[in-house]
Length: 323
Ligand SMILES: [Zn+2]
Image (cartoon, rainbow, N blue to C red; front, side, top):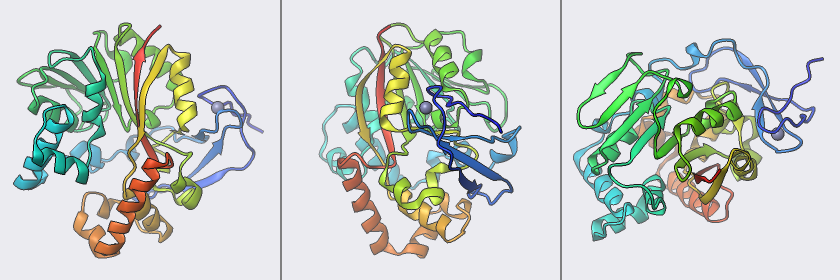
C-alpha cells in the first residue's frame, strides 16, 4: 500500500478518502483527497500526470477582463478601490460597504509599500489585478502565469509586464508578492516558499488569498464543496496550517480576515445537483435565473456572517518576511 506524507508538514494521513470528480467542466477522472492528522489540511493524493487539460483556454482567471463590465460598475469599483487604498469619498464608502475589496484595503497595512514598489503577482491569470493596481498609480508591476493564454511574454506599456513563467524562473527581487487564489494550486508549498524567499528581502510582504477547509461550507457540503475544485486544488489549508507553514519559512502573519462570498453556497449547491460550474461562473444572469434574487441575497448575508465569525470558506492573509 502506498504511504503518503503530508506535503505541508510531513504528517501522516487519516485513512478515509474523499472521492471527488472534476466538476467545473465535467472532465473525466476520480480524485482522492485525504486529511492530514497533524495539520488538518486536505490534500490531493492522486494528482494527474499532466494538468494542462484541466486549464483550458476558457478557464475563467485566464479570460477575465474589466471591459466585460459596464461603465457604472467600473466607476463604482474604481471609487471603492480608491477608498480602500485610503482616500475618502462618500461613493467609495458606500461601494465598500456593498462589496468590500480587502486585497486593496490590506495595502494600508503595508507600511513599506509605495506606488513605486516592485510588485509580483504569481499566477496572475489575465493580469486583471495588476491592471487594477496600474489604474491606481502603481508603477512597477509584473505578473507571471505558466498558463497565460498566448503562452509568451507580453510587454504592456506603463510599467506592467506579463510573463508566461513560473516563480522558480524569476531572478529579480520584489517588495511584494501576491498569490491570489494560486497557492492552493501548487503541488509543493515548501519549495514555493523557498523560491519566494529568493525574490523577497527581509521586510518584504506576501499577500495571499486561499480557500479554507476549516469552514462551514466544507463541513456542510464535503465532496461537493465548490472550492475543492479537483484536481486543480492540491491543498486546502486551514487557517492555522497556513500560518504555521509561512512561519516555518520566516514569515510573520500581520493580518488575516475571511473574505468568503455567496459562491460557497450557489457553487456547492450546483455541484450537489450534478451541474457543471462553467456555464455559471462568469454569468451572473444564469446564477440569478437558477437561484432567484431572494435566495442569492440570503447566501450573501450568510457569507458576511460566516466571515465575521471566522468560518468563511476563504481568507486573505498578509505576511511579512522577518527572517
Ligand atoms: Zn500536515
